[in-house]
Length: 255
Image 1 (tube, rainbow, N blue to C red):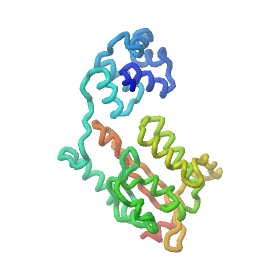
Image 2 (cartoon, one colour):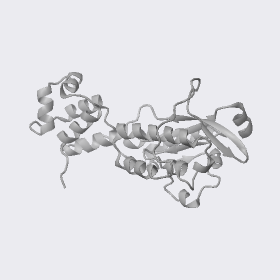
Image 3 (cartoon, one colour):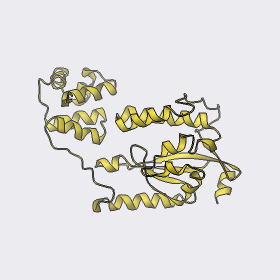
Image 4 (cartoon, helix red, strand yellow):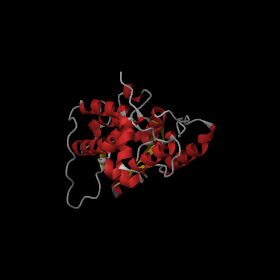
């Protein structure tokens, strides 16, 4: 099996970002000739040059480590376990945000949409879910679109499914994650497949999650929170998904 070189990986990310060698060279203050030599292995980039190129290509931190290793350098970004002592401030901030959204559902996820933590409000999303889907690691997108999951209670399922795939496809473009690619393939095999995003109404602001719960129709706005200045892989791949009332009836029902 061919092992990708640093040049191979740089070329991959340059093409993912739809940049020519000349465009990237101009942005990173180098020459297109030198960049070509790096991509073909005729020149060995310095650690500083790799860092500069990765910054302009917006390469995810996990992939920057992979690129550095391929070039023979040590990784630049740690990947501590979430329960590591140095991650205590992150855990505290995450828990504070989750609790602050009570009584509305909020959950913390990793890059692959696996649930890391959740507040008590998430219980309303789990009503009637097949227990097999709640076996760790619990995947939020699988829970949402699986026919034995939340899908049967989502009143605007085609619209919400379109929203999920639009977001997932964008995330795949940004990260190139093989785990996400595998998850997307699984979700496409569910009933309904990867339908295109349904066009919103002219006066529609966002795509709501409309959910049937205990005989009531609830409507939520989805809000994503990420850490603004991540300096390790673990923090960079964390996100909090919050579901806030989209109308007064939902606010009253949950209050």
